[in-house]
Image (cartoon, rainbow, N blue to C red; front, side, top):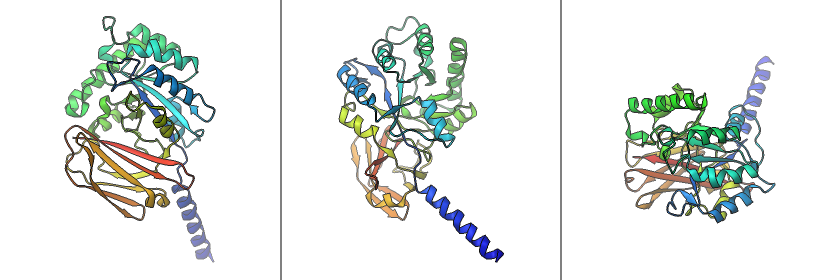
Length: 337
């Protein structure tokens, strides 16, 4: 009788675990801006009309705009995010954020995180903010994140050079703001495992890349996705689609290192929800365009073979699937070579 009871308890536990594991509890979409209304930089700026259309969408009742810290803390602590949670981030501290972006975000009570690379922040730089302006923004509610010191391609640096970048940035933050930020964003979204381990050593809570995708509890919290918004990718239909997307629930992703050393890379991952396997599709892009590939599906496991090597620099993979709830699930990843 004891053996039967024990077996029943084990089976019940496994059923509960499998039921929980097959569902994504939380999803959040983070958007990334750089500049606002600066026409000569279309790859990093949105037009004023685009920006106004974004605000018009984000202020709809169906969305809940939360701070990045709230989003990551809620997921890490197994809390519950509201439906259609959105986070907003700004990279590089361009003056157009202070003059154009922030007044509109502030008017609409939208929390924003500004990722600052400290080398550009001084009184004589006409294109970027100074520390008085950053302190003012912080007092008005803007959260400040770290973005290295010099905005180098960090994966091309030695580990000692990366450590120096972090140390210089941290010391400046301590001097100017009295505290070191807990959130980090990689310049250009480029990272490798050594840099990620270094960020953990310096006690950063999470780090963000620049690849499209939806954050959920299976995400790599030191390589979190963000949807980049600029003139090309800032049209309202794309924003609406992304804002309503849910996490795909990917785990055991390989290659583990965002900087690849085997080319073409062997790509594989598992899905929490096996029901998504039949509908999943993935696309890989580099500077030459889309890379032809074969997708192999084994129960919950997906493996991808590319037909050619990736070009040097950044390349991206996007995987999507439509769930039984009619929500699109989205996972993205950036490779660096």
